[in-house]
Image (cartoon, rainbow, N blue to C red; front, side, top):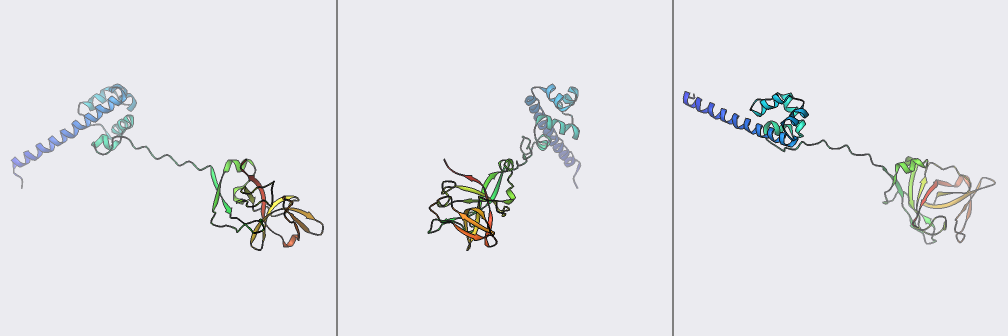
Length: 234
């Protein structure tokens, strides 16, 4: 058991420690007054009376509510103001991430054939192409039904050139006369202008007259989608 002398010694140390902590709090409070301009400005910002703030500057203990108000008014960490530990600056909450204005469209990979036809293997490692959602919507295009593709070859020049990026509406599989479509032939993708012919026939053309055209039955034509946009370097 502690004797009376030891008890007195321990109480003195605890009291001294409490006084040091209180003095530190007063110093932190004075710093807030300096940040605010003066004590009156801090009191006004915290919504407390000048006399109340003077009492705390003199060593009085603020209530939890007042302590929070002082920390908010001084724009400092509540934990720092109360204990002197940690960072002084108040950690602001992370700003919510802004929704991206871009949408990624699946990309149809492509390569040149020996005949310089525009052909492609669908969904290759060329994964996606970014487009602005607002721009797509303003042109009546729905990103959920679109895919991108890069043209290789000159079979549709001058309408579409080598290296141009095009957008394909993969929901548009009904043929509109004289529109350009992506069709699938023996596992390859071809870009062709389609013209409706009598007898449920479809004429497939390249805009470049040096490339051949052919005619097929509508029922045997596998349409991937219709071209709705072309982008090119000038």
